Structure formats: structure tokens, C-alpha cells
Image: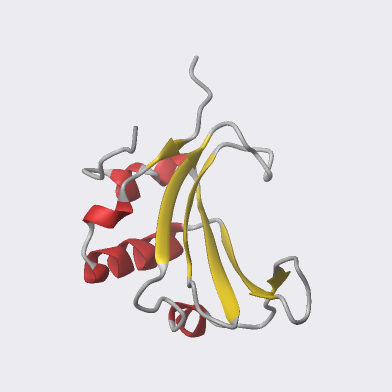
Length: 117
């Protein structure tokens, strides 16, 4: 059995399509969280507590990098899952959205999305 993570090519999606995928993932997720990386405070990401999903999506700015990954190898959550999110690439503070979708619902996100080789 192949245990490599599967990365999906989100770069081929338009910005509105990417936002639809993020919102769909949030609507069916098991959990989500939002981190920030502010190197003036710490060289490690820190979880942002009490932020709404809409406020987190406000950081999905032009130039943000979106990811969709079927996690099969690196299992920080001790379970295989679909990881959907983005890195804002903002300066001086960079933001990260993490959305965990159960595999039984993964097809609702990745259907028709090409895999990266």
C-alpha cells in the first residue's frame, strides 16, 4: 500500500474557486484552527484563539498559497485525513488556516481536482 501523502493542484483553480473549496471544507470539517507566525514574537507558529472563520478568511489575500493534502504519511492528528487550508504570505505577520476534513467526505472537496505528481 502506498503511504505517501497526496497533494492536489490548487493553482489551477481560480481565486473564487479556491474560496469555494475553503468554505466547503469548513462546512464539513471535523475541526479547524488558525495560526500566526510573527517572528518578532516567536519563531514558531502560534494559534490565534477566538477568531471567527470569516475573520480568518479575511487573510486569504492575493498571493496566499492554498493547499489540499490527503495526509497518509505525516499524521500529526493520528488519523488519515484531508488537510485544506492556506498560508497568507502576509508581512510582517504570516497566517495559516488549517481545516481537517474526514476522509469519508474528502470526495466532496477533491472531485475533479488534479493531483500533483
